[in-house]
Length: 304
Image (cartoon, rainbow, N blue to C red):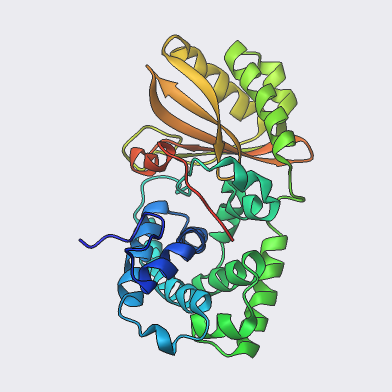
């Protein structure tokens, strides 16, 4: 299988390769935000590269826009395939977590757009709505360019963007939460879990908190959402008590925000991300499916 270029441009590379590499992180971010899967985003980049390598650069007026258009086409096709795959997925489906570089957190808008909470909101959009929202709201692509990318008229794209924006606004966290606020909440959560202090857990969990677990049928995970602070706190306190002698909780930067990694006998077992509203944890997302944890072994660079 032909792979995509990975290294920085140098004098030995042809112009097409240099242009692709210059935009590779952007294209990966576009594909990942549309798909919620790093593995599928990489496949989209490979397909984009194969098409880009056959393009006559002399006919391309805006290379960035052209590459984004190819990536969007490929991601939309992959998104529809993913939809069918998710229908047979065992248990709740969660996005594939990324160990992100510190500079992702410095771009607040980018970090918010790739957070686990936001990716789950984007999952509720139809494929074309998701593409339009990501390109317009995250990457500030013009309506005319988006229209070419999704095969719609500019007027239709404006209507789709308005509808998607309203849909997301009704479901996203009430405000963008800083990394510092997330870290403070996670520190309190970690202390409560490690000490088995049920009251401290109840103090940091919102009354309507929801816990989702993704084991993909490979690892044991909660088969359906656990709702309510009391239910979630008792599950966590009891579960941690059974594995405390062989486990550890470690902070990590995941999808632009602080998160926790659970290790069992020193091996990566679970990535635990959170959603925070008004200083309390309203969402807990535990990814255990081993197939989704490969991008936690190295930092991923995202860009807009």
